[in-house]
Image 1: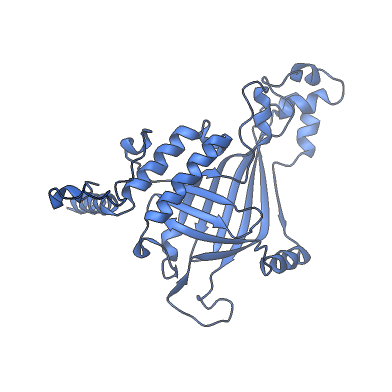
Image 2: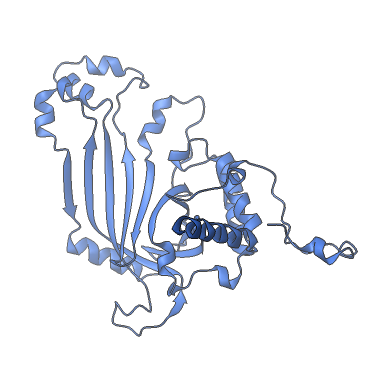
Amino acid sequence: MLRLVAIACLAAGAAALSARPTASARTNLLQVLAREIPVPERFTASVAGQSSIEEAVANLEKAASKDDLPSFPRDLMLIDGEWTLKYTNNAPPPPPDWAPSAAGRLAGRDVVQRIDVMNRRVVNCVTLNPWPVGDDVPGGEFLERLPLVGGPIAALAKASVRLELDHAFTVEGDGSDGGPRRAAGTNRLKIALERVERTLSDLDESASPLFATFLPTFSEVDVPEPVRAANAALAATALGGGLFDTTYCDDTIRVSRGTNPLLRELRVFVKADAQIDADDAVPEPYEDRFASAPPGEDDGDPADSIPSD
């Protein structure tokens, strides 16, 4: 019986999503992301791909009704959980085809954002492989044979660093800042970095045992109070450091825009445990079926004007 209830709830949720006015634009965004992001874990696209993605995001935001838009603190649980970064315009595009494949090692990958609403935490996690070594690095084998430094270089060849940037977040209207409480009224989060954790994985200790002894696999550091104060001061200026608006969010997709007018940062996340329909991941031309019909073309059966999704 419980299984039947669960299935019914999932089906009802899927039907509700497909019936929303944003359904067509939402599907289009998923398809554009699948088409324009050549390496999914890298979350970047070519210049032309960026334009396509940002146009698809704008179409989704435009299609959203007032009821589709989150309003905090009432709807904060909607953003709770683990989200995978699918796109950001605040990262360099993939290197050109003629560049060595190692050029992409400097960029982060596998970015995940964990949001804990109850404890007001936002943790951004990213994996890095910044070493100038490896099978795909020109001259890498030569570097590994150098005296003194060759061992440590070989030890790092397949190693990666996972950074976790732990932020506190506040929302105007939740009473945490001493101000008045209200049910809803904003879609803006104010985040402040407080701690950074670093985890080193896949270090080849046999290549340089002494080097591995002195290189800790885990470290953490608290952000000093003067730095926190400087970040808070920046957030209070027109540059808006640490301020992000959630311009769209459902059970699968979340769109976040930074308020800094210089960076104009856009981030698109997908819920880590979301079940995306296979049809949503197949790129196809976008057709805005919710646009007004040209004069003389809306005289048919009224049922024809009802979107099927």
